[in-house]
Image (cartoon, rainbow, N blue to C red; front, side):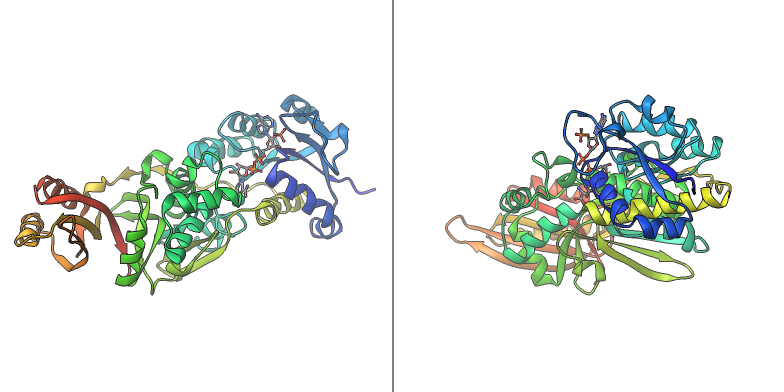
Length: 429
Ligand code: NAP
Ligand code: HSE
């Protein structure tokens, strides 16, 4: 009988459950594609007492030692999540000579370099297609299909929860708290939504994408990050009137050898394909010197789309195992300097609540002018006669972030200014 390729799963939750289901459904197809059947030999979970449908009791364990003692396990699939113990488990699996497939963006963003070196040292593979964009193929295109390109930029919507929330704010005119409650009710947002709404999840994914795109070592601390919690229904109304959508944009560029990686809410011109990526969908736009612009779009999460990415990696490794092919060497990454935010140039949108009286606009314009910031447009959108206030929406031409920050500080200090609301970068248009 043909010897199966042994697999162990670390985790059997949303993604692990999807992987197990797909493995059962597609067993014959996968056996034909690999040349041998795949066999799930061990499943590591936290709570071994819980009944798990479709899983034989004998395969379930809470001990990594039990997994690694099984010589027939050739591929370890890490779908448990979190930094620890996932990182240690992946490292030990690689050191034991197992190939590893992971969906873990936090581990790959924080420790990817070290783990890839560990994999090379032990002549095994570490694959992580599912760590960014769920079911969207993006790691493999960046590592293989686009390798001939000098990648000039990666711009992405890589958090489905926040994209769902921002789409709802744009379409329903709702406020942040209401759409968060709706996202939680629908199971998109966690009870503690911090990782999604503060851009932490997206910063992990962007660090992975930038590393691959620019062949540099990037960690989440290299990514400048701002979340969506301060956005208001008014920002969305003004964006629409100006011809923009608001998206939590993850963007990476290498400028004069310095990395600019940001995750922040941004005005995206409605003419840009990313402006039309709505709901829980994710999309990654890559610009290369040979290929031009390519857009990868699809479901960024969910058990079956993520299982699709996990299993693509599993099948790839299994085919190599069956064919006896040695693992390819990883491309060596170098450390890169990060360009400070103050030097990063962008156009900006700014919302300012002011006293509705003569000379106010002139004082704001003077401050901007002194910082060499050129105004692109000014619209007085709203006045409140009772309060004697007006709301000015100012857009600027391209200016370094540092100059805008200095101007905002001075504008904020004017006695005729009640509040400088959101200041957001503008993309496209
Ligand atoms: P999940 O539903 O919370 O499942 C986690 C699984 O890992 C559970 O089976 C849990 O065991 C097990 N586990 C957790 N900590 C453990 C520990 N210390 N020791 C042993 N077992 C442990 O998580 P998930 O949504 O499937 O996500 C898994 C990974 O996939 C994460 O890295 C996530 O970022 C990534 N991912 C998820 C999605 C998605 O749509 N959910 C999309 C892309 C990537 P018990 O069953 O006993 O609790
Ligand atoms: N929390 C993530 C999102 C899903 O909302 O996109 C897993 O990466």
